[in-house]
Length: 303
Image 1 (cartoon, helix red, strand yellow):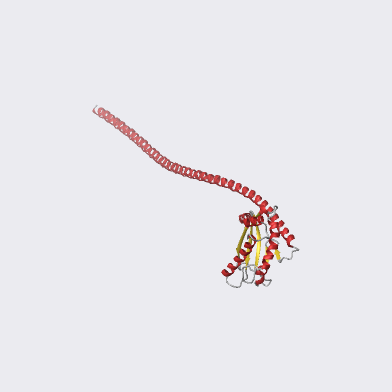
Image 2 (cartoon, rainbow, N blue to C red; image 1 turned 30 degrees about the vertical axis):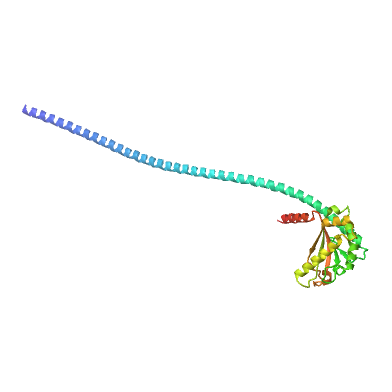
């Protein structure tokens, strides 16, 4: 009986030992399972953390890219504003240039109109001058007077040897006779009703040869021109009427040229006899103004 009890007790002990081992094994399995689960979770957590860090890095990069894009957009906006401002300035300059162009166009039209008017006056003056030159040539072509009418200007050249002694300024008697015959016929044309309104000036010019110095020749040429004018307008001269003298005094002037415009021979030498002369010439109204205007217009066109 003791053996049976002892055996029974051994069997119970073995049973509990087996149960304990089994429970320990189960516990170990649970521990392993929990450990694996925790390890797996840790791995997954770490992966998630790494993914989150990657996402954060991507977000940072994207944020920087967005910031760069924003700065680029702002820079482009600033450039666009600057371009708009520049365009506005250019538009303002363009409007100013257009206005200036319109003004210049109007000025050109005015100049063209003025040029047309001046050209008409010039044509008229050229026509009048041509008529006067032809009238003077016709008047003196059969005359015994020793004079020459310039084909272009209408200036009449008188040999000073007829009028004065050498190096003198007092008129000779033959010179007085010459003027007594010449001046009435000359003024008959220039002071006629047909041409009087066109005449602005009648000029008597004295010229000398190149002997001597300039000032002494200037004085001589001035005195000779003055002597001719004085003889034509003095009160006791009877070859001109009072009306002719009065009209002549309104337009008459004298000038001495000294030897500034000598007459040259074909060889280029000074012709002393021809250089000693008195010239009488006329100027027409507006002639100088038109000449200067044409020079200005021609100069403007050349530019």
